[in-house]
Structures are given as structure tokens and as C-alpha cells.
Length: 257
Ligand code: HXC
Image (cartoon, rainbow, N blue to C red; front, side, top):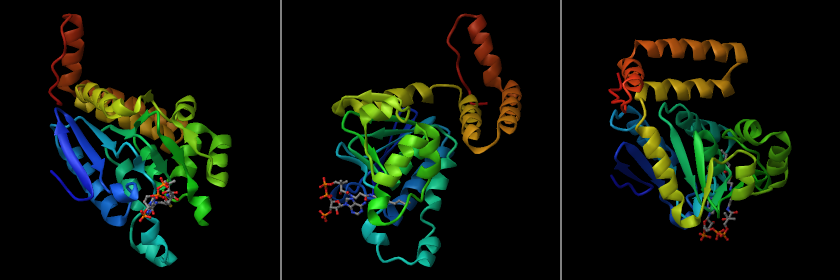
């Protein structure tokens, strides 16, 4: 399917979404965010898809929220447009999402990558939260997700003084999973997504949920939830198949049931 603001494609069991506003470095306007979330939700509902890759162009993953669109907005209009809720909708997707990031990854764009589950970055990727230079602050999760990922000191420098992280620094701080040459970042993300998409679907679903809870809840609540999800998987055919296949020294054949 082709849309003006995003391009979608399915390769094997991987759903791919490419942000497509190249003239403005994929600035995230309202329409793009609604279209993006709707495409993510479609992939999430599709049993033929096991993993999602979200990417931009070589020059920009996304240079942030569309400044032009929000420049004259009042607080009420900002609330009413339901714009920031789109980041919550992305974070509620149950299938693993890999952000394939090259070039500018700023502001709301960086917050988009942070709301994904993993990041594969090209050597040209630059991560930053420049909101302070516009007289505003982060609004779609960076104050929490960035701080929990790279720690307080680096987060403070990024949000208070617009420090950018190079891809290499981002890898060092644990923001990024893999670092690749610019011309292979998408292929690397796709290869990772294909591997993940081939795994037992219900186990993937529960495992993502459990790790996500590590950021959303207390340790005792998270541990209790993990245990419930763990026990529940013993009701699935895939658990029987996975363990039987191991014992019979053959590859498992997943049913997603
Ligand atoms: C609207 C944008 C944009 C943005 C770039 N453009 N970023 N338009 N919103 N966030 C547009 C430029 O106006 C320009 O349009 C075209 O894209 C190319 O950008 P240039 O500036 O000419 O490119 P370059 O010199 O290479 O500089 C790249 C850049 C710079 C460093 C990324 O564009 C930049 O600083 N952009 C803004 C980054 C930013 O402040 N992001 C945070 C936004 S606030 P024309 O028409 O001139 O060719 C935010 C808050 C999130 O994200 C809150 C919750 C959602």
C-alpha cells in the first residue's frame, strides 16, 4: 500500500513503515502521526506479521514534530488535537517494533524511536531533543524514556542544552542496539526483524509485554506479571511444540496458538 505520508510494505512476516515527508525531513504533522498509528494498528492485528520495522530516509528518521503546524497553537488546541496521544498508541502496539534510524532523529522523532522496542542506527544517525531551542520542552516521552535509557546526566544535557548524540555515543549509552554503515542500516534492521518474526507469536507477545512492564510498574508488580504470563504460555500449543522439538532435536513449527 502506498500513502502520501507513509509507505508500507510487507516482506515475509515483517511489516515495514517508511515515513515519507522528505522535503521537511519527515517532520511529524498530525496527519502523518494518525496515518502511522493506523498502519501500525493494522499490522498489529494481522496474524501474518510478527515484527514491524519503522524507518525514515537516509537523511532523516524524523526531525521532530512539525514546528509549522504547532507554532500558533494555544494550549487548548494542543490538547484538543490529541497529537501526543499518538505516541501512547504507538507504545501500545503489542508486536515488536524496530526503529531503523539514519540521519536526524530529533525531538518528537527521537521520542518515536524511544517508544519502539529496539533501534538499529546508521553511522550518520544523530539523536537529540532540541525542544529547549524552541522555548518548549519534551512532550512525547523523552523526559521519562530517555532518562530511563541513557540515565539522568546525559538526558539532562540533551534536554537542557540540546546536546546531540552521535550513533556511536548512542550505542555506548545503550540507546541503540546495533550500529551499521549508512547503506546497510535498513537491511540490518530487516534481517533482525525477520529473525524475531519467525519466533513463537504468543511467546513474543507475552515477552514484550513483560519487559515493557519493567518501565511501567514496580518490581514486585512486574515480577508477578511476568510469572502470570510465563505460566499462561504453558497453555499454548507452541510451548508443547517448542519443548518437544528441542527434545527431538528438530526445528519447531509454530502455530501461534
Ligand atoms: C517543520 C521542518 C522541521 C520540523 C526540518 N524542517 N525540521 N519543518 N518541522 N521539525 C524543514 C525545514 O524548515 C526545511 O524546510 C526543510 O525541512 C529542510 O530542513 P533544513 O533546516 O533546511 O535542513 P538542514 O540545514 O540540513 O538542518 C536539519 C535540521 C534542522 C538540523 C534537522 O532542519 C532543524 O533544526 N530542524 C528542527 C528540529 C527541531 O527543532 N525539532 C524539534 C521540533 S519540536 P524549507 O521549507 O525551509 O526547505 C518537537 C516537539 C515534540 O519535536 C513534542 C511532542 C510531540
